[in-house]
Length: 451
Image (cartoon, rainbow, N blue to C red; front, side, top):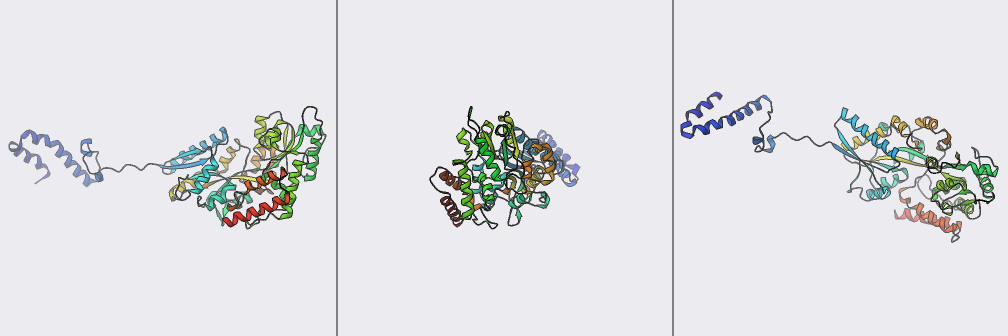
């Protein structure tokens, strides 16, 4: 029987099966015949809705998979800095769509970021995780030990273009676990108005700790006709105390991560810091109803403070009438760095996150980032560009090479809280520097035994 004889047969038997019914069947049979013929030719015609509703699932075309959806965690810095991050992510999405499978990226600027990171570390194996997140480099050892981070391809991310101590701090066991992003260093911020009133020269490179204390004493001795001036503001904060420990020849931990707070150097640094506050020309921020050193200096009653790059934009915005300037510390300071880390274990998502990370840390992107923040890019290749833009703040950049990175081993992450509590007790006269030194060493050894 030929394929064209089907209608004739139907018409032949029409009287027996109802001619009208046969005629009604003709369109359906024609469509079926067309589908069979098209199947042989490799074509896939669009079937009428009535037919597709009844067709088996395996006959229907498969829907396109949804685009990959990446998740990014960060904290909010400022409107302009947040906008920069969103713009970079949007540009990455557009660039990727032109060369690879499209994707979406959700940026979450979390309000309680430390709590979110603690939760991520606690549920590293089973909890919800972002693909890419911004970290304080101080937290890296803790997050890596919790199994929350994945190693990075150092060569693909140009990890050679990083300040040495930042790259060392971003590695665990020789592998790179986060890519340093920006760094702030401690410097000496001083009030030129009070220096002029005291008739003393401004701080400069080569200043000693003794000269700094003498300048602080001269400012504290100014007449108190209108207000009492203080030479220096010092908080109860381990990070601000560290330069005195370094000056005394001490360290918190050795190269192997073991406690290295040797009794003599630690006791000397504690005694010097405490005596500056209790007997000397220094004052705590709270004494001036300020919450931190930058605010205390901005009020105009303090000659000097130890702060990072972040203080200069703050002073310019909140205290524009304070004549503040920057000078190097008399000795090595402290570096506070941020970095980007990847948490995703899925190979495809991890590869996409690496591409986004490369976009965020590319020299061109970091160059535009400098218009939104005073932080220094972690790449030395951009140092001259930062210095050109912020020439008056050069001491922050000059201090990087000798600054010690603010980072402790994973099992000592809780040390600053213990240290600050003990320092408070010494300032209040409840303990001695020797008591505190021994107490801190015991606490460090206990933390490492528990780990």
